[in-house]
Image 1: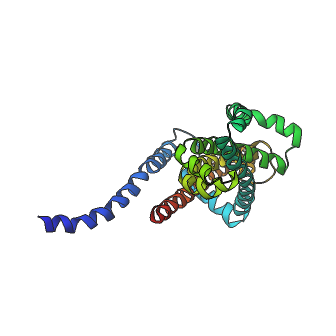
Image 2: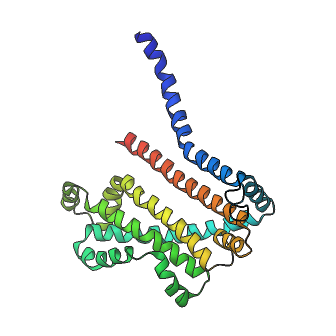
Length: 267
């Protein structure tokens, strides 16, 4: 019996990820089936909800024409630029307020107040201040990324054991050295929670800004489809936005898992 169990264990280890992957496909499959059923039975006309194959055909046409890759490239460049600004600000502000009570008292009330205001509420003011050009998109992305990263970094730094702070005090390390040599390696994994949330928020903010005030990018492509009442273009854009968002999140999760293994091995 022990031999059988031992022989079955590797198979179970292989089967478990496969089953988990198949289970993750259940939701999209059911959604696709419901979509096909609604269009096939005529419950919703094609002008309101185009069939899945029509959307896939439109996606293929947009891709082969180069229109979709160009829109994706423009949006991703904006995302990288805005997210880099937001992540740098969020990590810096969160770390500073985490290690300094004075900085916390001065900065964190404003950060929490800003976090309570949805991005869409800021867009009309931002449009009046900077127009609908690139600064608007960068500001929207940076704002969306900065706040969750700031709050996550602040909580992670403030939650560190006091003994670690005492080590820095005993060694008389400067705050910058303390942050770089002691805090960041220890906080690398907790910080990824804020980085993932910030990236997701940044992607949503970018698409929202492009929908409202842009002449290029994925959001503009979807809005253009709405204006000319080609909902297959809108749905193709939504599909693309969802897939890219999923890939971005998955990429950060894989990086986090790899970092976790590396830090675990180092310890």
